[in-house]
Picture 1 (cartoon, one colour):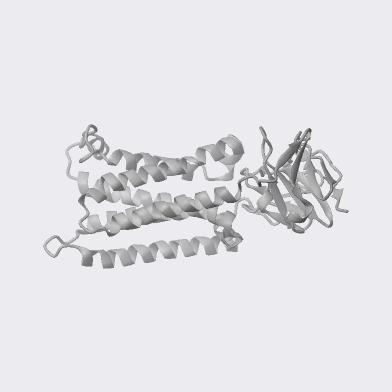
Picture 2: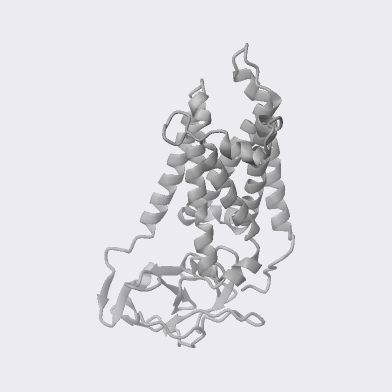
Length: 345
């Protein structure tokens, strides 16, 4: 990884990122608590606890929507990459907002219950056989538990301990949490809402997340010209790779390969960053090293090794050029194997 990368520390970028997030959250909560009562029926004023629940609950939903939009948005436009670098901070703050929402609900609905608030929450409504009145609380509890687990394992220690593949699979649970939140709102707040604004906003958010993911997925689809000439794979024309940038090439039955162009030569490594399986092919060459677009981890082009004193290594691949086309040997070399870069004629 880059010698400039600090795995633990509050650098200026993180401080600015978190300060802006906190300011946005505080502004949203403040405006919501001031505006929301004006949309209520005059004979049914919104009480403080209900206002807090709605404010923090809706804020958590919007934050979760934004988190899921950052990834595909960054794939579609590199200007969103700064939002991606510290997205784990975004997730931890979202978890804190969701916990505040849950705490407000427990204090309001179960403070005077003779039972333990958590027991009362789980036993108060068991109408699982009907849609109207379905215990929507279970979806909120599930989503909250997922957010807590993801926040608790956001540190790089867990990434190293669990391995990048397992850690990434665990954090894909964010999508299950988002679906649970949508069901929590649809079977809860929407059932009693008199104003259609909530339904419209939630639908637009879900459509935004889905549309961005479809657009980003379509952009990553294999190019029509991709073909195999055993044992080599035709990746595409040399001209398709700009100087200092890469090309992601899907490999049948294997992990995608990233081909980079630097100083008139081509090199190929695994597309998966050793840090968090980030898409290296979407990064670029900085200071002579492949630089991951997610967190700045760096690798040498010829052997896939991180510059000293770091020890991360990537699998490398043999290349050749025929008639202006790039061909890849799909059999990976052991991580850290030196492969002479191919000169572009």
